[in-house]
Every structure is written in C-alpha cells, then in structure tokens.
Length: 129
Image 1 (cartoon, helix red, strand yellow):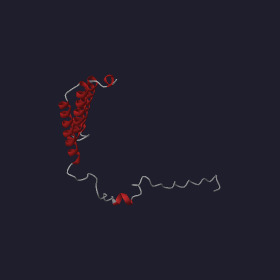
Image 2 (cartoon, rainbow, N blue to C red):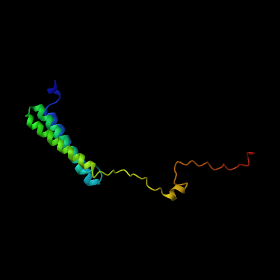
Image 3 (cartoon, helix red, strand yellow):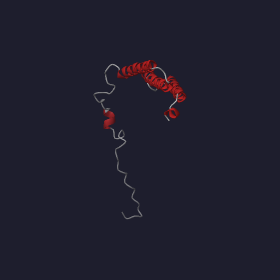
Image 4 (cartoon, rainbow, N blue to C red):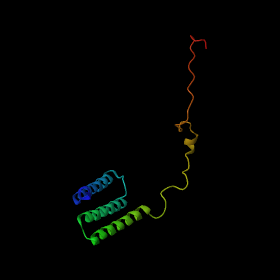
C-alpha cells in the first residue's frame, strides 16, 4: 500500500516543484528587491531538499550510508539556516518605543479615530424651532 502512495517518481516531482519554487522566489527578489534573505532561504530550501533525497533513497532501497549522508547534509543546511536567522544575537525588535511626533499628537486631524460631533443643522424659518 505504501508503495502505491509514496514512490521515487512522486518524490522527483516534489523536488522539481521545490526547485521551481526556489527559482521563483529568488527571481522575485532579484526583480522586486523584496522577499526572504537569500542565504536563509536557500539554506532552508536545501535542508528540505536533502530530506526529500533521503526519503527518496529510503523508498527506492538506497544504502543506509547514503541515506545517513543526506540526513547529515540536511542537518548542516539546517544549521546554516539557523545561524543565518540568528544573526549576531541582537533582536530586530526595538526595545524602546519610538518617540511620538509631538505635532501629530497635538493635532486633531492626525487622529483618525477621534469622533467629532456633527455641525448643527441650519435653522429653517418654516419650523418653529
């Protein structure tokens, strides 16, 4: 039953899709300048690729040494990914809040959530009000 669900050809298709995904995301970053950092992205992608290759080897009857080598290479790529994301140990989150713009704080127009009363309706001479 497992042979019908998971086979080497299916894993080859998944690997092709992963390669297409990697090319698309790196192409997007090259064109738009936004997206994940290339080192962290590629190391994450390579870690997954090595796990897929190890799975393909297990499904197709590869040697245990070959599967172990792929698992180790996936570990190394995962470690590189972790190191790239970890950075120099400093957090990207600001510890102290930014100083508010005092002019925007004092201006009533700068606060979109402030509810202003409606202007009074003009008095009509026809109504005795």
